[in-house]
Length: 210
Image 1 (cartoon, rainbow, N blue to C red):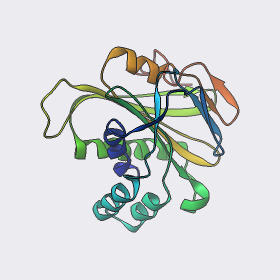
Image 2 (cartoon, rainbow, N blue to C red; image 1 turned 180 degrees about the vertical axis):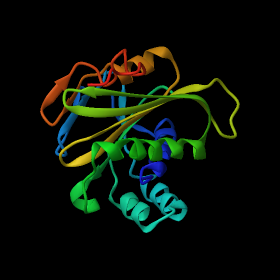
Image 3 (cartoon, rainbow, N blue to C red; image 1 turned 60 degrees about the vertical axis):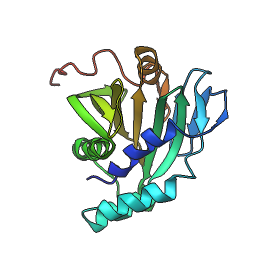
Image 4 (tube, helix red, strand yellow; image 1 turned 135 degrees about the vertical axis):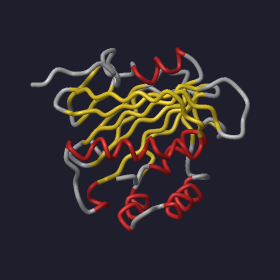
């Protein structure tokens, strides 16, 4: 399932958009999650680019299922810190017309990661899996350089999970270790269950079988 492939474009777009505010504490969504960021990250309005990005995603969709998913995807949060960016995207199940199972989560996350290759030259991808409370998480981290640009590589990271009402992916383009730390170690609440960090230190370690 690659309905989030287009959404990776929003991460790159967010780094260049105008900021709305310099204060971010806790962002809450009616879809059942909240996410905290340091106060020096600035929210970005994705709406100017969203229609064009969705249109491009729909044109590249391989199936009607993907087109429907693209139409339903919401941008729950878009923020930047210098040239780094974070975008949180959600696929509400009531709009999509079906829910997902934990077995479908890797395919959902891989679809989001696939979209990065349209915008970045990606190297050294690493995939991990972990849990936050009862919520399974899928994660991929890679080095990425924006296509057509000369400059240092970013750390590009995507973490996805399933909530009662939606599938959610947190995506970042981090220019340095501090911005990656802010993305990974901000507190998150998932369907009422709180975790101190979105990404724990052992996220890329092989998890023991139950």
